[in-house]
Length: 499
Image (cartoon, rainbow, N blue to C red; front, side, top):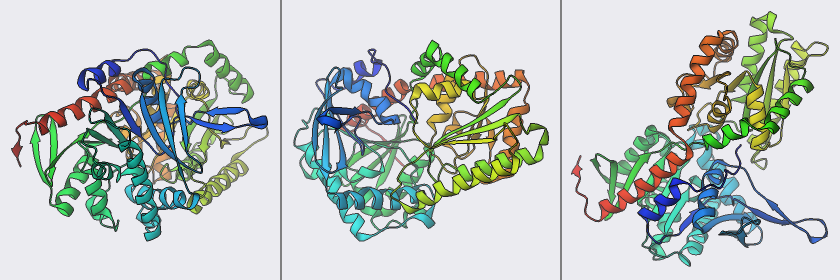
């Protein structure tokens, strides 16, 4: 739900140069930061997909140069980006459609994604999908190894590419490899349900550094590597290290964040204020009206149906709110080729329609559903307009929407209702907590946020803003670069005490 950050020189650029002299940054992700398509009449059309990784790394690569490797079904592309001021390369691997479906829709998103989110009943592992997953991961590694020098830093992202580090070593690449695992790492008892778990672990342990969003994921990965591979662990003041087959891998909890300053700058613009006022007039939100907001990908991990049920319960419990409170749900479709996601979309639409039928009045529709992506500038205007943001993820390793909402509240108002099972809750404890599986608890959290005194809202938001400012995207980048450098220094002779 994010966009590219501004291109001012950043501390991470200097840090990369200092810690890895002469290195290029080579990034591997499932999606490319830019896409080039052909429009009507053969005109080139550049697309810039939104995403937290893109928002974090595109500005850095613009400043330092380097290579970004991604994949799509269809033909390969070699791009020089950004189009307005080319400064780094993007290699889009062309994958046959059936192979891509097995790799992405199949193994990654019908297998790993639900299982890592502890939704084991939704996970399916097929041998044909595993073959495709291996094939695509190997293709990534081959493309990187063909160009990477030993002095370069290769940074592999997320569950779609777990085998890339291992294949890179097989292809002879001896330089530093970092991995960032953006989703939860499952507990050992859940991990056992993955037939190929040992191969996934072996591939990842060829990296020098692996970052996770939470300490819980670090501990779960550590337990799995020791149990399934017999890896040994050691500790130092800088963290936990795994030793496996002569290789050293450091683990770290480094939660990703947002460009706080960028969001705040957008919030202060005349465009944002004008858009906020237009939306306020269009939806007839008066001074005594309350707007609640949800912003999510339409994913079953986000708890959207239970959130809507909680809002319905709120209206039932507090009849005085009828006509005075509205809920706006942004639900961006994703993975629509998977049946579970199509069913979820239909279920959300049914719930919205049922609430509007049951509680709606002439001139007042309690729930509005928007099913398309919005630019960050539009989201910030909504963040500024919404009195309450509701994040009710069932099991979310982080949640950048919660941080974006807080960053946008530059005047100190607004309230955040946040699931206790979202990773962001570890940082944002001043939010109004909610239990995402209980519509009663969700309604209670909403009510507390709505009826809180102005003084309580200001106090909570001040604490939330302090927390968000302490951990920005620059903080995250710096911690990653320092962590990788520390792991390499350890490999060169840093002594640790076995445990």
